[in-house]
Amino acid sequence: MTQERRQQRLRRYWDKHADSYDRQMGFFDRHLFAGSRDWVCSLAAGQVLEVAVGTGLNLAHYPAGVRLTGIDHSPEMLRIASDRAGQLGLAADLRQGDAQALEFGDASFDTVVCTFSLCAIPDDRAAVAEMARVLRPGGLLLLADHVEAVPWPARAAQALIELISVPVQGEYLRRRPARHAQALGFTIEAHDRLKLGIVERLAARKPQPARARDDRRGPALACQPAPAGVPHRATIAAIMSAASTSPAAIMDARRPREVLRGSSR
Ligand SMILES: C[S@@+](CC[C@H](N)C(=O)[O-])C[C@H]1O[C@@H](n2cnc3c(N)ncnc32)[C@H](O)[C@@H]1O
Image 1 (tube, rainbow, N blue to C red):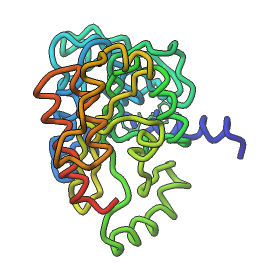
Image 2: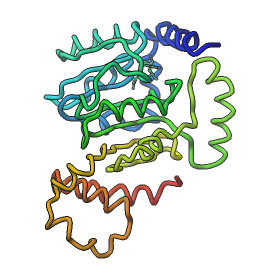
Image 3: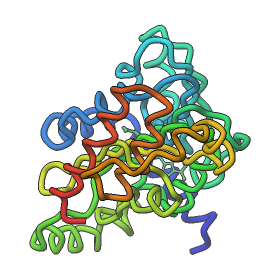
C-alpha cells in the first residue's frame, strides 16, 4: 500500500470513530493517563500549537491567555473539537493538516503540544522533527503518550497487541517519542513515567543557537566553574538553559534527573 493510501485509510478510520472517541478515551483518561492532560497543558504558554488535536479533549485544560492553533488530519475529529471550542468560548484556530509535514513556518510557536497521538501518526520521528522546526529556539515541547512498558512481560503483551492494532488502526504501543526529542538536542526539563512506564510525559526545551546562548549568558556566567556536586551533563545543560528563565524553572530542571534515574530508559 502506498504511503498516501495508507494515510487516507487512517484518516477514514479516525473520521469513522470520531463520535465514539470521547467515551473510549474517557476510560483511559480516568484509569491510565492519570492527569496527564493537566500536566501537559498547564505548562503551555504564549502561541501554542497542538498537533493532532483530535476532538479537543485538551482544550479545557489550557491556562487562560494561550493563543491556540490545532491541527488534525481527520475532519470529523476536528468538527467535534470546533464544537468543543465554541462551548468553552475559546477562539482556537483549528484546521486540517498533516503532523508529518506542518504548514507553518520555522520558529512560529512558543509551545508545541502533542498528546496520545505519536502512537497513531505513521512516522513519529518525522512528526517530532516537524514540531521541533516550528518551535522557536527556547520554546517548549510538551508530550504525553503511551509508550513501551518497563517490565518485559508488559512489553511482550504490547508486542502481541500490536500484531492487531498496527494493521487495523495504525496504533503503536512501543514507541519512545521522548528519544526523538533528545536526539534533536532538546533539554529535558521534566520527565515522568507512570503505570509500569506505559505512560510517558515530557517537557523539553528547544536549544538556543550557540551564539544567542553565549550572548545571553555573558562572559561572567560563562567563566563560572561547574557547580560542585552536580556531575550530570544533562542536568548542567538543563540548569544553564533554565537560568535564563526563573528560579522555579531551575528547580524544575533539577527534578527530572531524579525521575530519570527511577525510569529504566
Ligand atoms: C488517539 S487520537 C488523540 C487525539 C488527541 N490528541 C487527544 O489527546 O485526545 C490520535 C489523533 O491523531 C490524529 N492523526 C493521526 N495521524 C495524523 C497525522 N498524520 N496528521 C495529523 N493528525 C493525525 C488522528 O486523526 C487522531 O485525531
